[in-house]
Length: 214
Image 1: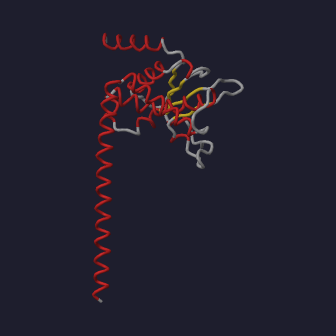
Image 2: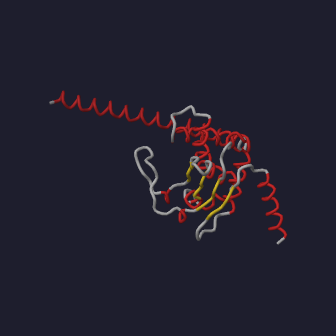
Image 3: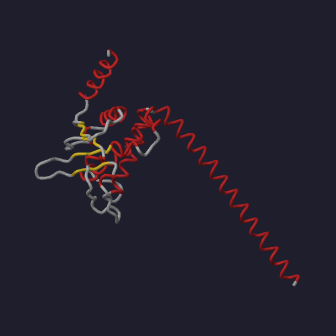
């Protein structure tokens, strides 16, 4: 009981430093606490300018979305209940707000991901920062084309910055391992292509010899 109380107090202090309200609206669903904590960490890290004008971030689940379809995205329409998140632009009565579909987000990864703060943050950040990217595309622009490309560009940039600042040592190690594996795989691919070319030449030579014998 004491541990829960301390846990709640810590979360309340964290919430007090978050400028944008983070609300929850679920239907017959109990979300993992790790996701809510991750959203608070990510929002707290964002610069206030990234969130200027956003009225709220709402955590929800697919059952609350109904059976509607999205607008056409890259030539296709998608079932809203299958989406990971939404950026709702300002309307006559409401400012812009972000919606995260928690059950769809966590379904992308094994359950043990949520035992790691880093993996949970990266999982949630991919969608949250994508939706923030839509907002930034409309307010400050992007290096990429507007729409999904711009949102994804912002998402990659923000995730790289967040990971580098909050998980500096881990990011450095992962970056080193990534470059190492990339080098090893590139060398293996190059060697494989060389072997295939050599085999192709030998096959061609054999074919020429047989033709000469005829």
